Image: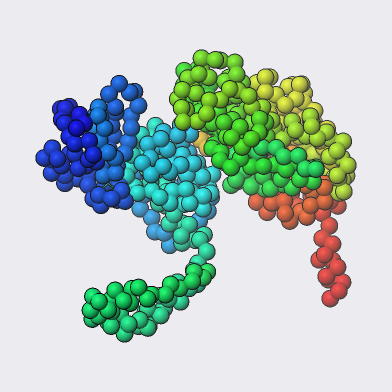
Length: 224
Length: 306
Ligand code: SF4
Ligand code: SF4
Ligand code: FES
């Protein structure tokens, strides 16, 4: 068993549980701060300290195991500065991100965001790439962001990093990334109904038949 | 063999001043030095933090020192005067104040401890101390003959004394020596070490226009054809603010403001179309043509062929 402190009260919970499971074990019904339960949705941001340790740790409740001496608080929502924009009327220029999020220029490179990120993203580096107008780099470095908001709650410059990251990835996807010709072709084929017969055959097939077909599937080569 | 040196471009050299960056790489390659951009770097901090009790502002520059070591170098060169000033001063503070150094290291606990063992150089430092202007001279194929170039240092290359790239702060000569090496004619002016107005340009462009009027105006009275700078912010202020100067001074006529690396590249025979002159508010091309430093050989040849 592990002793954990939640809302100022100490409890004993089985030590093989995640923080999320432990809270439910204690009878909490989670309505906020829970989603996919698999480390993908970013809903279950949690901060904690260990008894006798000055550090403030961060983690995803669904993906972090309880430990003896944890003092836990969940942060189900992180208030964010989110600009509305029409991606079609933006241009992928060095100052595009700064115009929407000028606070990026306040980054002092303290690296607190990187330390807080449960995805081990180099958050400071993507903010810095955004600052110098390197949209491709900002998009690449922020790719694994699940928008949990932990970085933004810790930033002394009050930057909402994850919204900067998603803007970089949108700009990159729309204006900078090389286009997959194959994809365009396939979308057209789908629109023209090329696969409808096959699909309806599949939806009608027996489970046995589906298993056979799956085993015999052929993968298409990746073409750019 | 090409010598390699760690290179910190800085944010502005990646956006507004990208031709300062690209021409620096070209000329240094020509001089046998490869500028190896740090694989990770962050903003220098923009201005050196003077608040004694705020160490936050020292994190950015010191982290770049750590990145330099991570890249296997103990020396880092930069081209932007503002970056140079911020990095060099933070580095000096770190070396001279053990207590602050310890606190910075404790804060950055995820990084390896920094011990103050990196040297910060401005590209001009490197040219003077290592490459030597004689070597620059030897690479010149298109001497800037007859071009009257006013060197402009501004503040950040020279002040404070501890980080000055020139021993003589009041009357520096490094840029003039470079101009001689390139075959040009230096036009020294008392305003060459005056402040351009720096970041006040964001808040009060008329104040900076007034500075521009004084600085550029004085240099044009000495019949300077062109003004040579080493800082993107000086370039921005002295170039873009000429737009507003006409209203202050009807007798004013425009003078182009170029980076020293652009003129080096031109003198070393690089095609002027690669130097980024199209990005300038005051176009340097007409005066360079007038002085016979740009010749449109191909076009003429093509016309004759037709
Ligand atoms: S970058 Fe920020 S929002 Fe994205 S996963 Fe990391 S901490 Fe969460
Ligand atoms: S926490 Fe904020 S100020 Fe610190 S490095 Fe990250 S973005 Fe910059
Ligand atoms: S519940 Fe989705 S990441 Fe934890």
